[in-house]
Length: 543
Image (cartoon, rainbow, N blue to C red; front, side, top):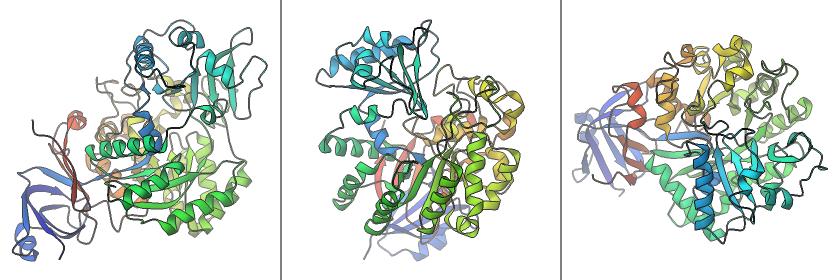
């Protein structure tokens, strides 16, 4: 007989509209048997059920991150970790320390540096600044939005990039006045570097994945919906699951580019769907990129940028080819996610989804990031059945990327500002919303994003009135987007996302009630326990 555990004497927030608050919960094996009053739940438990006293603590469904890059994030933990750097001097100091600590690393890789440090030298990011610290080994630093890279001279040399190298389609090699590459590469200009950088060994990758899984559990995550770049990790995740070591659920996706073989990608994802256990490894997603990001003028803005009216950004697909690929993927029973940040890319994605009619409503295709839709497209999420997938920690990025505040508004213009990351507008238009992080681009902690969605304000209270405060949402709406909303966005709402009888016992116990504390304090809440499938996978060490 499966083990029974009765959780009582707590504040259970179920995210279940039919039974929003409960006194007790009974778990049998990996699933919830009953949720409700103490008397009704106790009556359904066996005499020898273990009783766990929650001591008045707040419990809720575990978080589901609807958009991250898990294998990349696990590698980030072993790279030069630049997101935590607060000054340009700190960036160079971290490079120097890492190079000293890892003398055998053939390439030095770092991720998530910001575009605007207070002590950034005149002339900005240049290869010579890296050369001064490390000249004998290639150095590649990816920007905080992963759409640009900063290289030293050795990395440029090994990549074969010289003054005579033409810009690739969909990318730019930034040059100085004399035509010499500066070491700054945009979009597809740096994609070839990924082939040159040595990949970790299988053993190292497995260790990195396990470390990242435990970090996710520590932050209260039971499932991550990974948005690509995980293909090589899938066999290792399957092995970890077979060994009984997997304490985090995965939704897996594979990226298709205009020059990729769609047949091969569909076959790969269909194989995951057919061969893996969906409760832990759910293969169902084809991922597209339509554009870049607004900050580097690569988001697709057909109307032009406010600060550069003649530039419209990058559109990576021809509409006809993209529409056909979306329809084909959905015909195969797969879910489509599309990276679409600029107005033109969002419109293009929704056009493709609308063209597939009822099939789209069944498959729930998604628009990832969705930073600046038109007023009409805000309405079209509900009409098409598309999911708006947001990463709320990116709203007003002062905490995550130093010096970036004001840049988004400069690109888009003040007239469009009311539609910046329009979470509230899409909810009010009956659209479905899910939250994630895009980790490692921003912090993995869901509570940071929940706070940001509610306040739209940095930790030092900037702007004073909030950034586009008319798009603020309630704490309850933010919790829903990180639980049941995210489960719905991944076709997992029947098993995950709320505390209800029959669902998987994935839940967390928090140090404070996010519905009652001051919103500014939400990001300070600690996850005391994480339970996945009825098994404790994280417990905060005693002070």
